[in-house]
Amino acid sequence: MSAKLDQLLASLQTVLGEKITKQTVALDEVTIECRAEDYLAVCELLRDDTALKFEQLIDLCGVDYQEYGEGSYDGLRYAVVCHFLSVSLNQRLRLRVFAKDEDFPILSTLVGLWPVANWFEREAFDLYGILFENHPDLRRLLTDYGFVGHPFRKDFPMIGNVEMRYDPEQQRVIYQPVSIELRNNVPRVIRNEGAHNG
Image (cartoon, rainbow, N blue to C red; front, side, top):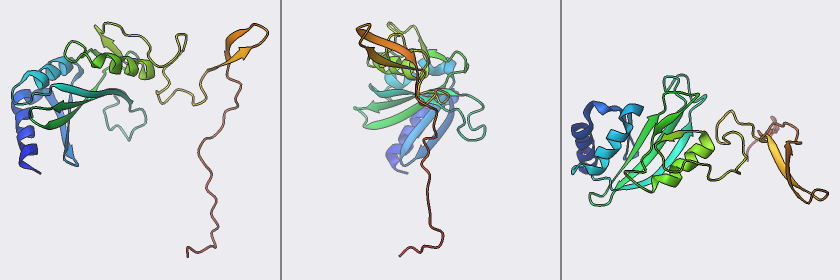
């Protein structure tokens, strides 16, 4: 590990202490986790503390950990993952935080700290159903106004629930139940057991 990475890990421990619930280093990238109730406070310290100075939120996305390993995240399903950049200290950090409730996943908004979080959080809401408390304009971003469900959830059907088409008699676009048959999208692999790789 480089001296710069060691310095970042030491600074994180000094500034955040027990607010960090998990810390990993892989491929010279640091990932930390915190509790949902500490999320906003941790982000504020990451931005404002002189030892960290993460001025930029590069990305924020939702993740659905349903069926991800055997109990690897204590049964928690929805998480938000943030990527931060400190331009002044030339360092990067990843933060993961899990929403406590699978049925009503909710976390604090980061729009007050980094305005760029606005559309990132709208995307996470639209695609995963993660709600962001005190968000100024939390509405769908990528799906249609009447869309039902959240298409990136692992339990959302791959063929969707409704389809739209133009109806020439009504002279407008209409929505109807999906007419596509359920199908297996896993390719079948055919091997000739007697063949040799040459």
